[in-house]
Image 1: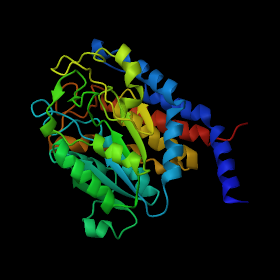
Image 2: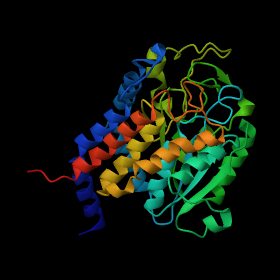
Image 3: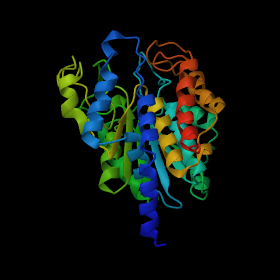
Image 4: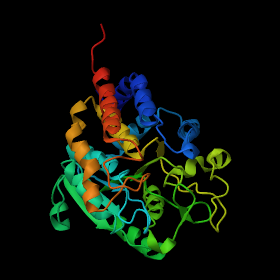
Length: 351
C-alpha cells in the first residue's frame, strides 16, 4: 500500500472516533467556577472557537501535530503566568498541562524545549520532572533522542524579537509549538490578566513573537487558554469582543479589552488550561491507539503539586494549596480519569 493511501486509511479510521474526541472537548470544558463574573463564559469561548475552526478541537490539534512530527523533531512548550504581587512565581494552572504534553512527546520519542520567564521556570521544571521527563544540559540534550531542555525567555519585546529569531535559527529540528495558559497582547499590544489588569511590557516574555515566528516558518502551533487573554485567542478575538465581559474595555489605560490578538493553527479553549492540555495529549493517544501514552494519575498529581514548593499558588485563591483555579485536587483527578476513560472506551470492542 502506498504511503498516501495509508494516511488516507488512518484519517478515515480517526474520523470514526469522532464521538470520543467530542467527549474530550466537553470534559475539558466542564465549567466549575466559583466567581460569578466568570460563570457561563467557558461555553462562549468554546462555541466561538468551534464555530471558527470546526471540530472537535482536540482531534484537530492531534491530527495537526502528528502530521508535523518526524523522527528527531523538537516540540516547543510554553507556559507561565502571574504578576509580581499576587503570583510572583506563577500558578498551578499551566505547568501540569505542559508536563503531561512533555511526557507525551517524550514517550513518542521526541525532545521538548520549555520556554518561560526566569521567575516561573523553577516551578515549571519541577512539574515536568515530576511527570517523569528528564532535564538535560543543552549539549547533552542535542545528542539525545528524548529529554527536556529549559530556556529562560528574556523580558521585554525588543529582547524577545532578537531572542526568538535566533532560537529558531539554532533549532531547525523544531516542528511544533504549544502555548498553554500563556498571556499575550491584545490588538493594542498590551497584555492583561483575566480580570483586565495590564501586565507591564518589561516584566513579561513576549512569547506571542515566538508564535508568529513559528507559524511563519511552518511549525505547527497550538494553544490552550481559559480566559481569552492567552496566546492563541486571536482567531476568535472579534467574536469574543462582543460576549466577553472585558472584550471591548479592559479597565486599564489601553481601553481595548483583554482578548489576545495572536493566531495559532489550533486554539482549544478549556475550563481550566491544564485540562485542555490533558485532553490534547489524550487525543494524540486516541489517534494512535496508544492509551499508555498518558501518564498515571500519581505523576499528574505530582506535577500539580510540584510548583508549590517553588512559590507558585492557586491562581484563584492565592493560596499555596494543591488546587487549580479553585478546583480541588480530587476534582482534577476526576477530570483526568474521565479523560483517560474516553481512551479506554474507544478501545473497547463493540458487542
